[in-house]
Length: 439
Image (cartoon, rainbow, N blue to C red; front, side):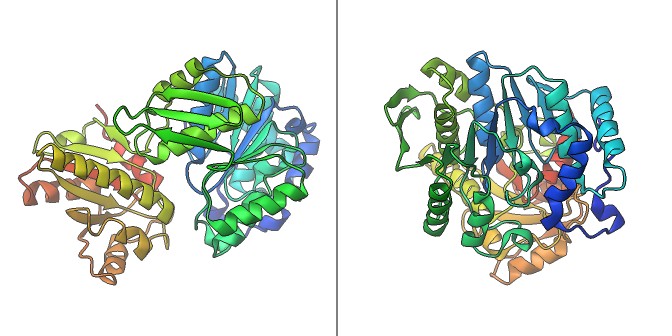
């Protein structure tokens, strides 16, 4: 397994400027030389949004596999190695096939200067069109939709837009209306669209685009909804004439995962895929999406002296993700109080350059014992831990900072005598830093 392929080289390494507005001109040039593999893909469900894209795809994949469908997945970013991005019938692409498709894409690119994601997406389309016999392909948008390489696909079973919030503002715009417009370009004529809960403005924009494209629109709460039984933690799902009762609690932690699960079920149904309650329950129980409120048990967790301490890693890196994570943490704290459990709660954060926001940190100000910042070693351009601490001071938060996770864990051991709940978030690359401590 490899961290990055031999080609394409991330454009940032050479400081080359990319004109994202010309993405499809570049893609079409290369794809034409390859015989247009993007026109020969398995039937596709295409997913965009700000938060929950990966979780929704993971739920869909688990449900469909229970229904005996062979499923391919294209997702990003990867956590440990780039083979994770291309999954053919449940298996990560092998090193040899990855090298082969990237060579085909590299040779076909000739003098066309592609970004890393453009090149990798072209490679994935070679893989799915030539080396897959799967029934359904699930594709996660890299960023937005209007200028995203995956949006070159025209024929789809269904488009999905998960909850929208501020992220990638330098490319997509600085308010949810602009971002919603960018993401609405995933909508294709006469193709069903499923949307999760949205800010009012985002919802209106999506409705306008869907109507313009004559695309049947299925909205969370309006057209499909869930009811959660707080005692059993099971839930009911209603979508048009389809009703599924007593669905088991999703394996992925956090109340927001009930919403992601409902979006996934609605996507299957709107795409005309026959699924049963048994398929859905299998999906809830067997879904796997690493580093989303994932409890870890590796060498790092053994460093904490006070038993029974817990460590969780999560990909929350924007305000919406922080909000979902904070709601989960508050629920855990409330449960501790009800059960007379004394536990301290530490939030460890690290970000890429200029991604740390005061609003993100503020979500944990009143519910954590302390927020601590660190450097993300896996980030190409990491934010300085001292800068994160300074941002915290602007909202009256004292955030100690350290260069790596081991220093933080030693610090926690020295200041606490109680069991701890440690949550590591801010950048998915931090998950890679955590998981390097094996066993």
